Image (cartoon, rainbow, N blue to C red; front, side, top):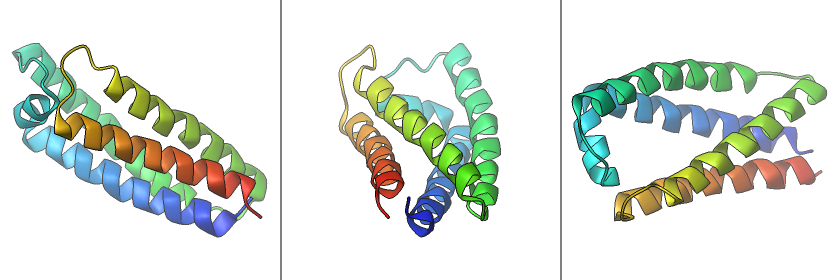
Length: 123
């Protein structure tokens, strides 16, 4: 496992999730529109709720990037590998027509997933 790579991936992911959280909190209707999703009041509320959880995740990712215990860092990387891949797949299978933004968002998720996997395998 390449710890330095995992730590850098966690830091980068923390920044991306933090930015996504701000976007969701400030302009949830625009985010939904870019995804091609319904922008009902319920969906806007749900996006703001997701923003709060993304803030928490971003903070935890940043803090976990400071871990020096290989076992703990490896566990975090495995969880984030699954989460990033899941984000990518769920975005690709959004129940409406794929938009360029949705494709880009999925690619970002898959990119992080691949980074975690490569750094978990690499020495």
